[in-house]
Image (cartoon, rainbow over all chains, first blue to last red; front, side, top):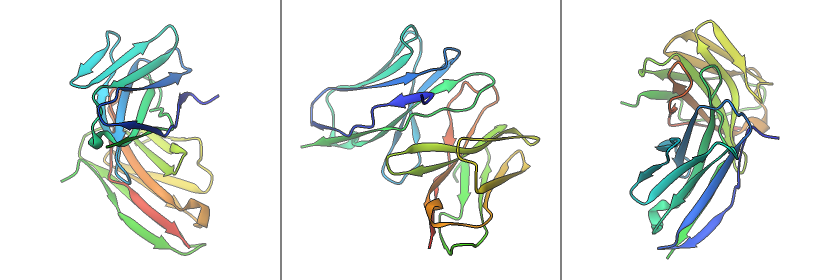
Length: 110
Length: 113
């Protein structure tokens, strides 16, 4: 089993839709969690951190469920510009390495 | 200027040739990583380094080697390039402690013919 797993999609949604992605992780010692956005052929860039209490930034909400060992990303009122690949990093420990999921492809259509 | 810089950005090379991809950073981070990305396979870790004297293999290190010349520099070498090493390569850095975000270079698109 991979350390961090994501549904690769693709998710195809119309503008204005709400879409959610999950990312499961196997290391119960993981301490830090992040969502990254990657545009085609570009480098991943931090979208948002995921805190134990959840994190909201405009249309984006990230949550952590430690008991079930997954993080989620919710996008409300999808825009065409949200089309990208979304990567989770769910392996952060003080002694460990970055651990990414394989990414979820989102396409928002008119 | 980018905080994490990769050179070259694009490279076409022939099978059997040795090639080096370079990464330098101005973030002052101790941890550096090399990933390759192929369609549908996400980021796969090749090598990572927690400091100049600490280098570790990732999940797909065969056919690759690395050198950490300084805190700011981490190079990836393909000793004898083969076509299935054609991919997009990313260097990344993170702070010591491992619980902070990663910063990526802009990527090197490598084609082995």
